[in-house]
Image 1 (cartoon, chains in turn brown, yellow):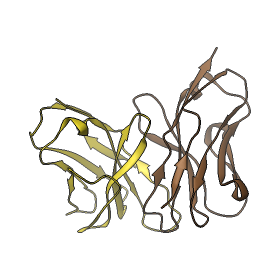
Image 2: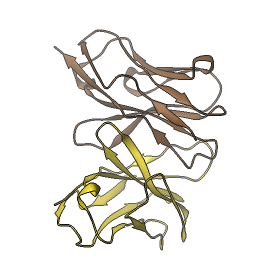
Image 3: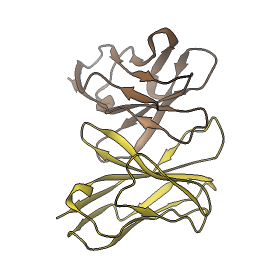
Image 4: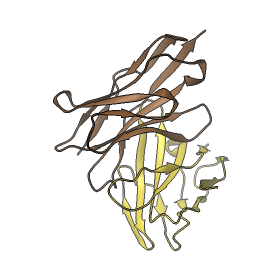
Length: 113
Length: 113
C-alpha cells in the first residue's frame, strides 16, 4: 500500500525567505500526488496536484512542487514566504483509481516577521 | 457556491451516546469520504462511498458506520462513541474519475468524555 512521509513536523522561516517542504512517498507505480494546506480552524484547500506530464507543477498562492521519480519525492516550494502562509501543509498520494488517498502527518509552518 | 458542509462543527458528548455527523455536498459528486485527523498522524480514511448504496472501509473503520442513501449526503454514525474517537473529522467529495481532486468540508471537532 502507498504511504507518505513528511520528515519535518515543524518549520520556521522568516517572512520573505524561501521555503521547501519535503514529501517522500512509497508506491509501486506512479501515483497521483497532492499538496493541501490547512489554515487554523479551516478545512483543507488544494494547493496543487500532479497526475502526469511536466514534473514541475504550479499551484495557487505562488507555490510549486517538483515530482522526482528517482527520489520518490514531491517537495513543495515557494520563493518568498508571506505571513499568511503560516499553516499546516499536507502531502497526499492516491492510487491510479484515485479512491484511496493517503496523507502524510503534516508539516506546520511558522512565519517569523 | 460549490461546497461540502458538515454538521455539527463542534460536539462534546459522553461515552456510549450514539451520534451522527452529517455531510452534504452540492456538486453532484459520486465519491464521498470520511477522514479523521489526529496530531502526528495526518488524515486517515474511515470510510468511502463510490456512489449511492456503495460504501467501503478505509484504513480506520472500527467503531464507525456510514450510509449513502442519497447522492448528496454521507452521514458518519458513531453507535457507541469512546474517548479514542475524540478527533477532528473531515468529509470530502469528488467526481468519480481518474484525475479529480477531493473537496473537503470545514471539519467537525468531536470530544468524547
